[in-house]
Image (tube, rainbow, N blue to C red; front, side, top):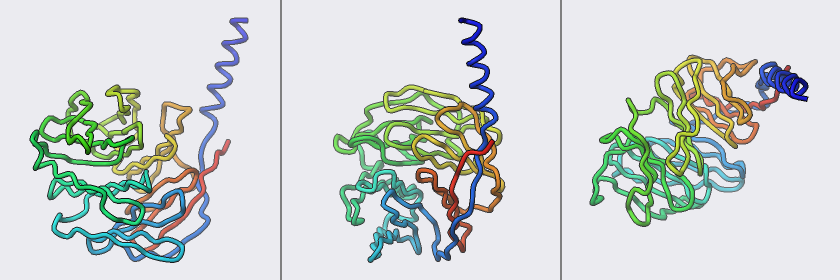
Length: 261
């Protein structure tokens, strides 16, 4: 029985390694944007132009601007009802609802425990992922209590790329992708084939990008592999389910991702 179990494990592992992923182009559309943010699960399109965030729905376009806060650094739409817009220049994060109306602002420079932040995105409940550059550490911040509730071990450098969802945050270090959970634990330290410049995730599937090449890691594996049938210059990209969007500065291309053997 133990021999058969070992054979099954080896067979299953070989299947995982043999299974690849390929991208198939299904649509291309022009897009006049400074930055493509992504699409949410309702197929609404988010992008920025002239320091203004736009949300294009089926029959209307919404917009939000806070020009006094500076350039927009990052926008997180993992929760369409609680969108986070981070401004590194003013050390401020703004939360918006689904109509791009402000819910609240967090000015990290005005807190009793001042902190400089290099990133900010939405976590679970009333929490935010932030990276404290003074202490070189990831933190989970409660924006209602205005305080850090979880501190993570310090890192050797500021993340070169990152992505997150409600429960996990992926930080690119020199040779690995560190995965942290909301409880303050390092869940995984995944070797990366290259040092990714950009990251995106959906349902814990992670895609990394560097030099016109894309790599993918599914939740069932602990390694990245090349995403086949795709080489594109990506100004930005996003992943929602099995749909990959790539923006090259002029056109927004839509791909489906499927397994290949």
